[in-house]
Amino acid sequence: MGASSFSNSGKGKTAQEVFTRLVEDSRHESGHSYSGEIGMKSSFKMVTVPEGMTIDDFVDKCFEDDSHFSQDKWGPAACVKVADGHWLFFGWASS
Image (cartoon, rainbow, N blue to C red; front, side, top):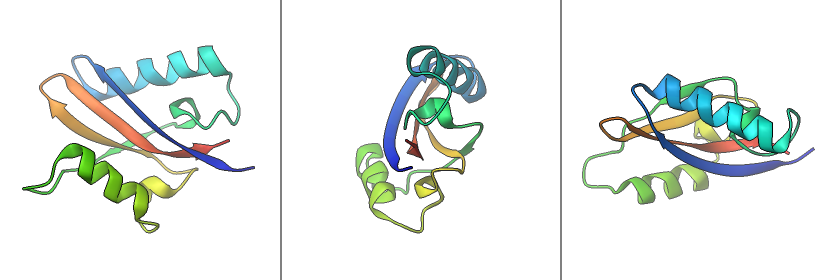
């Protein structure tokens, strides 16, 4: 069993609403086991992009940092608020 990185974004009233929809869509498309996609996640944790850093640079840094919680294929996805009503989820998932 390996792991794959994923990055998914969506719009909705809350991060939980968007996360639930993205997980359900992923499971519908790829099944319920070891797809390496967001559908393998059962929760997420909000993260804040440091001042002066772009979202893309922050996500890249997290993907490169072996100690960041998003690297845990069994742990929660990371979530960044992109704008009002728009969230980005990323991390590693079992594949």
